[in-house]
Image 1 (cartoon, rainbow, N blue to C red):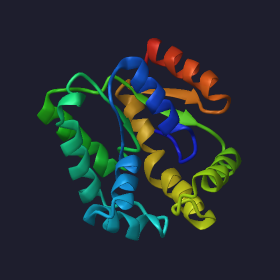
Image 2 (cartoon, rainbow, N blue to C red):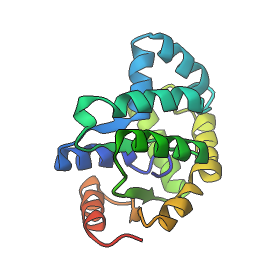
Image 3 (cartoon, helix red, strand yellow):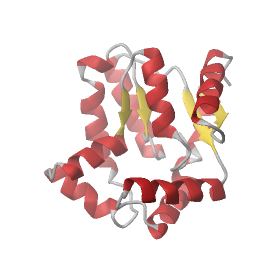
Length: 185
């Protein structure tokens, strides 16, 4: 977990490689469908172009399907999911149906100015249509309102691990590995 630009995708990919499990990014799945011109892609683009989040029903079904695939049987890293309380409840149900549990919920932290700078740079480099100034600000506001409060629920479950997302990719990766190896709570 963490706001857009905190480094979730980068760190999820590195951690997944380290652990030998898939990194499952709802954003990557959505962008692949947009690029491929699929029906899901067109639907997703209607929302992301405005800075809105894709409706829970679409996201939940996609995550349920992805977690049921064979390569996720021995573990997985979720990136960008859950984003709100309803998705936490849905994820709990998905995991119960699969007979698995979460080992940890990692939150990458960074201040808003740093995030805005990173996202502007990402928009320049990658040319992502969903990284306009207005869309970035709206997603950061939605994160603060809907997703950030989920960390309290995961903390109460003893699953939350917070890591400072500022620094080089390598430094943050080492902090992530160290934090996940330590005690939770």
